[in-house]
Image (tube, rainbow, N blue to C red; front, side, top):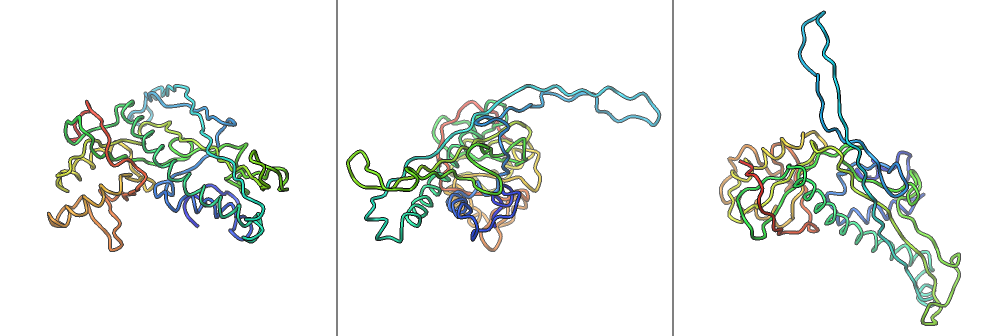
Length: 308
């Protein structure tokens, strides 16, 4: 069972008892970095209210039996809205009869929807992380450029701070993540074209929480001919800006990982900051790289501070 399911389902759910687990697996099968995210239930139906730490003062090294400093933390109140993904599935009655029944066909179609939803969420979340990093002055560049170039995000996932969100009115812990409702109680009805069909609505309502600016950073404008040593040096500084832990991941386009791997072989393997395992897993400063085909390979981002 993958990280998403163990993190989301607080009670034991098996695929044999709950077909929703199959939908989650399908969603993650084409969405590599969603597998590493922490997830938290939103504290409002379709939005999440949170406090973001603005400043912490008063913490200091003191002598024994000396006057204690007054510690204070200031917060700003923020909120993030969740997004709904979904649609209507309509299947001809004859098709469902010839294909093992309506339930089997709906499940098959829902798996395809879940996979596509994962791809769309990854692209959207990467863009959101990058945009927020720029807004919070947590984005840096390899070189100055106004032409499209790859970008990389570093995220330390933490429930309640930097994580995915799900709606309590569409998802229920221990039971379901996807909300699937049959139309006409599962009975046959005529669609707008007068065809006898069976229908269902499938929907998820999710969001991305970035409440702690200390937990993410980005590296932009990565040139095609960058050396692995230069790339690793830039990444080392960016990783430090994301307060790395065992829950930190480096997110990059799959095409960039392939390019860096090729250059790594070309320049030799003496770079101590970067390594590849036997199963082609890439690590930089000990942090795992998650490469996804859903991330835009080229982005135009200008006017950022240099990483090194």
